[in-house]
Image (cartoon, rainbow, N blue to C red; front, top):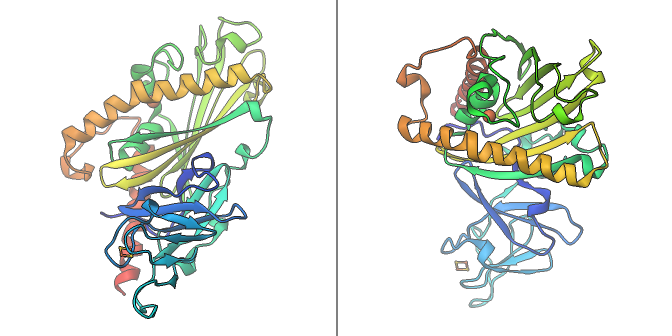
Length: 346
Ligand code: FES
Ligand SMILES: [Fe+2]
């Protein structure tokens, strides 16, 4: 499995890791145990006892320590064995569980699966839009996808599919397909943007515009940050040439590989209208996540199954006018993985 290891990935929604629980998830092919210290800060260890490799999440907690369920070796939150009830209690040198740098930010617990000494929290993309705003203006969600993470990135970086795949809530009425969107590379990011007039407006916005059901200017931009997180900003406006005067939704699509052919899809969203309306918030989150899981997911998973590989290029795909953004993101990531591999071999 070729992944970029020296990078931050979302390991869990903050809400998934409850205070006393031993949460677990496979990330980049590695089983990880995710839990909170007594003070709430997250801990991520390999979910594997070094004695007979039993998953530690099946064990129990004693304070900030974890006790293996099989023969009761006890490990602290750095992965060090602190108690061996067997024989004379000698602690073998190899009785260590791998630990991973962990940071909680923007409503997610992030993990760094690579070299711990390179884990700089400043390299977590700035998704602080999720930190501000009224609590009823935002929400978080998780979906599991049986597809390689780059195929899912392709889906967000080429939004021409919205014309064809999505129902009334998100549909863009054929307006994106004819466009040749501008793509900008900057540092470790690739950005792409579409603008169009739609009448009637997208179902997502229409009821909330000054004149519901009549034409509005629309825009959507996506910024991908290596290796696999994207901030999508979508909006509609009437009576102004400034998109920021209108309705805006900031949608964070954050992909974490589980294996080569499966992905943890994290989503965090905030809107700028009727920000205190809890019922609208629930409907918007449920509606969006339902669209992803009933409209995008079956198509993406079926494509993965049909491909039978994660090497897109070996299949010689046809390229269309919407492909430059996903292709540039793929190339940048491939280059980063190649560089990391070369450094590892050196
Ligand atoms: S498998 Fe964990 S102590 Fe034996
Ligand atoms: Fe979609």
